[in-house]
Amino acid sequence: MYVSETKIRVRYAETDQMSFVYYGNYATYFEVARVEALRNLGVTYKDLEDSGYLMPVIEYKIKFLKPVLYDEELFIKTTIRDMPKARIRFEYECFNPKDELTNTAETTLVFLRKETRKPCPVPSVIRKTIEDFFQD
Image 1 (cartoon, rainbow, N blue to C red):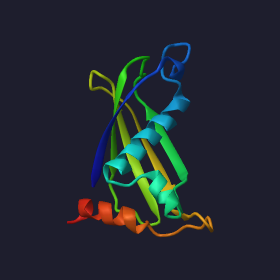
Image 2: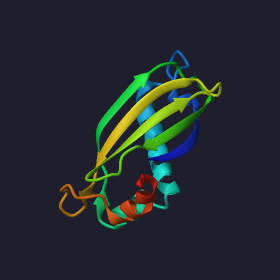
Image 3: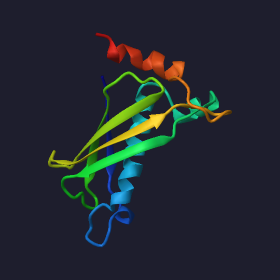
């Protein structure tokens, strides 16, 4: 299992009339957390794309537990529980400054070859950097 942590401060433009984070903005927060999780492993999306791979999101689920407000700093814990194959699943837990769980989410991405746009196994650059986290 691999775990990464990211902090994001809520900007005014990301809130609705109630001063809550607008629900659609969480997808962006999770993208930031996902990109940083891979970057912490030494892999960037740019490197993947330059190597001929794409990673589109094919599934996104979220459960809201508590509102997040303007100017709060969100702490996002990103977890990869299973060794990726042709897909990779990220789980997220968001906490507010009081360490209260505000929401949970999951995204599933599929690996595609850039030229063909067809599914493929996990790229070796990801497999090699992450496999040590999944040794028994």
